[in-house]
Image (cartoon, one colour):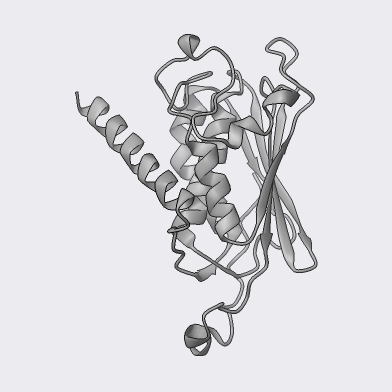
Length: 219
């Protein structure tokens, strides 16, 4: 019963987020953040699920990951958490997930690649739509981290809404769907390297973005 209550609350929270995104009501609280810290925290949070599925998560210390940028820490954490949960869910036991990226002029690109079952080309846009799920939902389990676990299909639409609200973009690449060959999937997130608040009233508070955080060791 307790698990059911938590699951129902999570679905309600997701529905509220989707409604805010659809009505352009998603407000962001920009603060200095470091991507390497995000992924270190996510690696710790998801460690039990990764261990249960015998999956390996590698976080590469890519250029720009240690650089301070202005973003909404709670929302951006939520977006990357959704992407990692998605990778865990659609990667068979014993598979691997790799977080990497690169620094571009004015942008940071983050990639999350898995060795999972892949996504059919005709579904690669639909997965970002509300209630969009691949495969036969009747065969899904009720867990967010079990193989092909079920859900309302709101995680990726919410992630796209959060990334878009930051002025970024998200897209996916996959050779296709194959549960035996497991061609894998790569999600790309492109975020503007914002170092000054868009609100001039806050500029005085962030004249200089805080110094770079200590580098996170590669795993």
